[in-house]
Amino acid sequence: MVDGRLLVGRIGRVVHALRGGDRPGEVRVVVDGMAHYYLAYASTPVPTGAEVLIINDRGARQIDVEPWPIVAGGDGPR
Image (cartoon, rainbow, N blue to C red; front, top):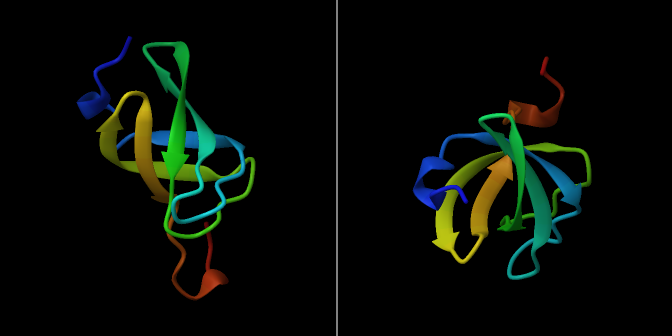
């Protein structure tokens, strides 16, 4: 099991869409070559397949994330 505090700053991939607010989805994070799955919360919806940045560990295999990379204006290079 991974210490959740070590996840902050890592990139994960959404495997079940995050619906935004208090409605979580699921994110896959690879640590030392092993995949780990967490309930993830974001302020806005994030679709399946998107990359996210882990910004907080809630404990009990729950994390807060935001879309990554953050694209200003939505039409710049990724």
